[in-house]
Amino acid sequence: MKILAILATLAILAVCLVHEQLAHACSVCGCGDPLVDASDSVSAAVRLRLALDFEHLTATAASDEIPDAEESVSQWFVRPVVVYSPIESLNLVLQVPLLRKTWALLAAGDTEETTMTGLGDVDFGARWFVWQDRNWQAQSRQAVGLSAGTTLPTGANGATLGGMRVDDHGQLGRGAFASYAGLLYAYHRDPWNLLATATGAVHNSNDYGYHYGANARWSVRGDYRLGDRLAVELGLDGRYARRDTIDGEAQENTGGLVLAAAPGVAVGMTDELWLRVRAQLPVATALYGQQTVGPTYFASVQYLMR
Image 1 (tube, rainbow, N blue to C red):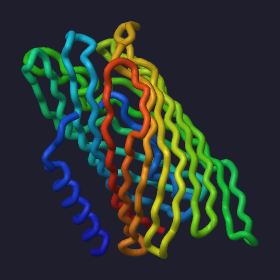
Image 2 (image 1 turned 180 degrees about the horizontal axis):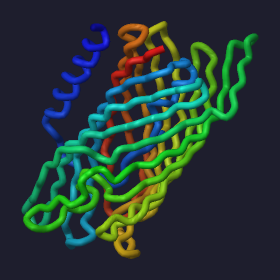
Image 3 (image 1 turned 90 degrees about the vertical axis):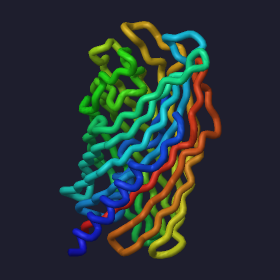
Image 4 (image 1 turned 180 degrees about the vertical axis):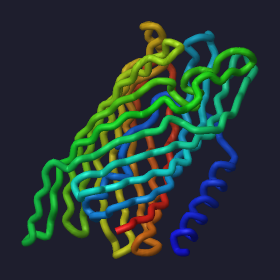
């Protein structure tokens, strides 16, 4: 009954957030660690972690196809996540994003807009902690982990508006595989935790010849535990992406660098049920062409099965 009540609560939250009123607005998106829900799994020795993640982001860019036109994307993610640890040193992560995305084109004073809802690109990844060290005297722990995974082209990639195909950044899915690999370092000494990650990703071209640029993402985060069920965090997340291409031709208004401050808080409603809220607030950008990136907001409800 307890688990059923929790699942019902998560479902209600999902329905409420998916039907929120959307703002306008992604071109250079996704800073930090792609396996964020597994970042601290090893420290808690949790066998199974169930999460429901919520994310909202916005971005604009000048159109590479239509002169003096601007494209904007606003998207909500609702993402069920399962983190399974068959042994303490290994996390297996499945993420299934459900998206609601609004894409708009502003050209010659007229705006065309479409909203799509559906399955995004499913992500399967793993993190293996290859080295761990415990200092019982100092009551500290260190760990180094390797991560790898792939994003599957499960999201729709052929949406049209007025008979024309919507820009690739406005599609629910990339239409291509994306593979990534990374490195994590974690240091825990109550009440402090330090986490640093770096990840690189590459894509293949989709059926329309669109190829997302290779990217590197990184994150440095410090957590401070204020009580048994309350912690605050502050991090710096970053992402650098090469320009996207179509049939080998670079797209001028794609790619570049984003650095974002990442404050957050974690609240334990019970020993097993946690609420995490964080944001990525851009503090410096060096984007190619004409682009803007807005803040990204995250919330996650997590249930730990020890």
